[in-house]
Length: 115
Image (tube, rainbow, N blue to C red; front, side, top):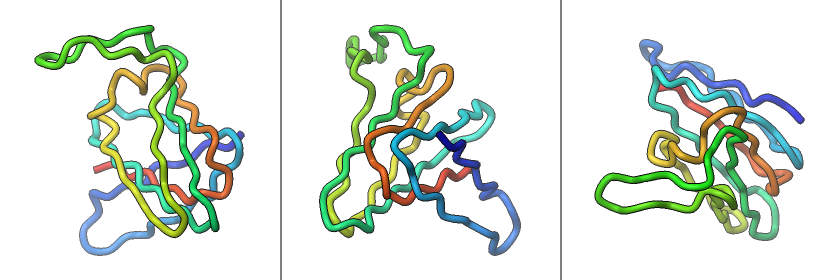
């Protein structure tokens, strides 16, 4: 299990943006003081599904105007072969409480930006 380091995107001009190859289980640290963008790229020949799951998440999360969401299964992001996806982590806040584990997408490339 590796910890995926966040990249400071607040630098002036260009900045280093290292790639992290996911294993079967990795972690990220949520920084409530920043907006965080998780960018995923699938370089493999098949579809991969990443599960985002915080160990401090309750069973449900109340979303104003949308009702209650069941958080028990984590948040899945399917990424087809050769494609990329991104998620602003504050938009899935209920899933990112506590230690956040990324599973199920071994070989996927990830970048976590602090904006």
